[in-house]
Length: 188
Image 1: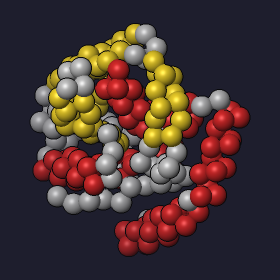
Image 2: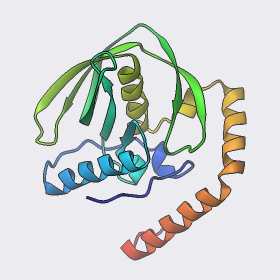
Image 3: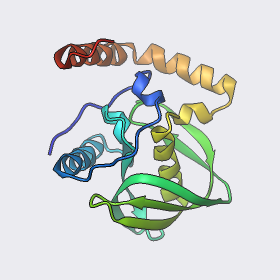
Image 4: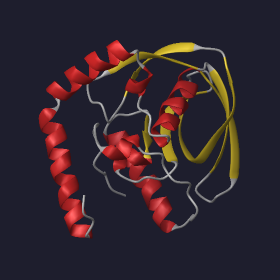
């Protein structure tokens, strides 16, 4: 297991729709383990694969479940929302937007189908914080950030402040991405 770098906004991978997972092998299991370790190290509640530079429809979460009394890690692959109900406003943050926290309106409850690391079908009904976290991570897989859910004026203000306060982090991440591209022969 390893801690991976978290991709900060405005990296382009955060705006791309992720691809379905088709191969369930040791490499996938390693990615899931690394994502869980990375999320834990960053003290996050959830982490999508594109936040660690992998454009696949995967996210991990470690949130309170069962009426907020028990916590547990969940690995979600190829998720599909079957139904949404109600509305909830929740203050969200994001590991790809360090220091940013804003209220977002989401469905209060949802039904989700997905597969586990072995490719076996799973289903869950989520409420409250768990539902909010699932929707936040699902958005990542569709190339949407929680900042995109803000009003246009609020979004402009938040992005202006974020970019100003995190200039060095962003420049460092862009430099690392260019180095990785050169090492793998990908030209950007």
